[in-house]
Length: 420
Image (cartoon, rainbow, N blue to C red):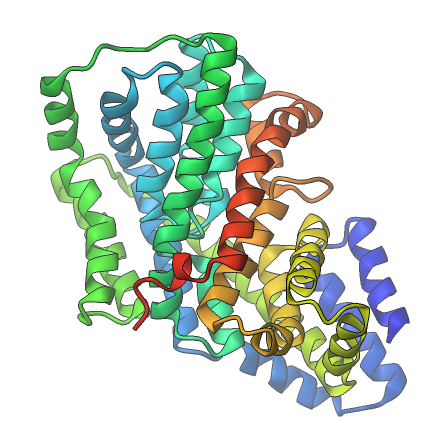
């Protein structure tokens, strides 16, 4: 078993795509050990993605892409600017506020970084902010997307862990807002230290005008969250409704969606969906091998042998997730680690929703850390700066994110306040 794990790690380190590394390594292991017929492997891979809940993934991706291609993100950014621009270091707060709003539409940190990232970084440059601070706050705020609903990682977490996706969505609302507040405190620290100025005076008329132009776009998260909370939609149905609503806005209201941009949006959505589901399918095989070889029990016994202190064990679980998040795609990590870690978390008294939010936040922090650091690569490309510069700018913003993680871990009310 150790050779399987090491082999997959080596494959990923030499640049083999995550899904192929997981599927290829698992297939070789099964061929050598002759545990099951290969036909059963194919059936299990298909079974891993044969879920009605997973239908939410392409539709939430489509809704976010339609918002981007329809120019709706610019309206959201302008509205956030009118609210926070009068504060010292205002563009930092605008960045966080826009990400919180956009998180109710995209559901993915990379989508947030790619969709709003170019707008946010350019606006901060124009306002005189240095690249490291601009990239740091943009990277940190993009991790809010998968915490506040809708959330693609939460969907995977719900399917793999057998947790209500609706409850996971609701459980992420307060933690996401706490993340925004924590990042804003770091922005405040930089604004005071570097004497950042304001970008515009407070103007209630400007707030009204930008709100009026962005109002229908701002109704997207209301539609999603309100529909789920009110029992009108399941998460999958909410994803379909959000896609249709975004399409209608782009075609008939804002009239910014062309045939060319529409077909590009469809292609991008299909490509991203295929990538995610392939990872889920391949990671499911690897997770199944771990389970059938009792790796969950072995890991649990090993962890519990280190200490019987609840605080120490919870910190160790977080440490495992943080380290894995540095090397492994978040979707694959959720699929593999949830069956291993969830029994331990339940034994330590964590609620399933609390555990789910904790896992997702850990792995989102992993998107900001080398060597994988997908958000860092996206922002380096968008900002056209060296990867190392993105790492330096983002490092200080790990402090508020880690502080939020500790709060979620040890204060269950933060994620459970709306769960009945």
